[in-house]
Image (tube, rainbow, N blue to C red):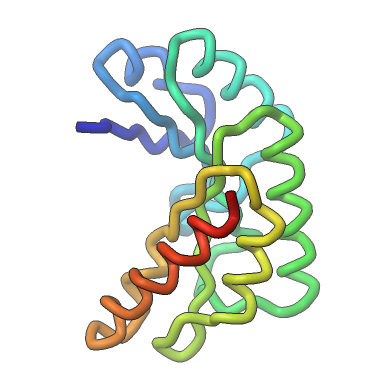
Length: 148
């Protein structure tokens, strides 16, 4: 079983890995559900986690609130994915939802940018209409597998 620790910054990462966490979900500002961490935090967390044998998944979210993003926010998310890759992250965590439905266009767009990285659809999944969740899981699995 994979154990994951959600880290808001560097605090707690060593202890979590020593306690059995094999993956760190790195973000900032958990008070709003998490947003993309700074480049410096990414770099340090990846280095520390990899030295201790754990993977790092970086949250890609430009702001708190809903998961429906404007064009300028999507460009920020693309830059965040590139930054995560450049800092050595193993993957990214994101989700795009609009009015209870998967935002297919934005999700596919970001999956293409994240090609080669592990990808996780985050808590935005909870905002998808419950009847549509199985379909979203199937779509996500297809896009994520094509991104390799």
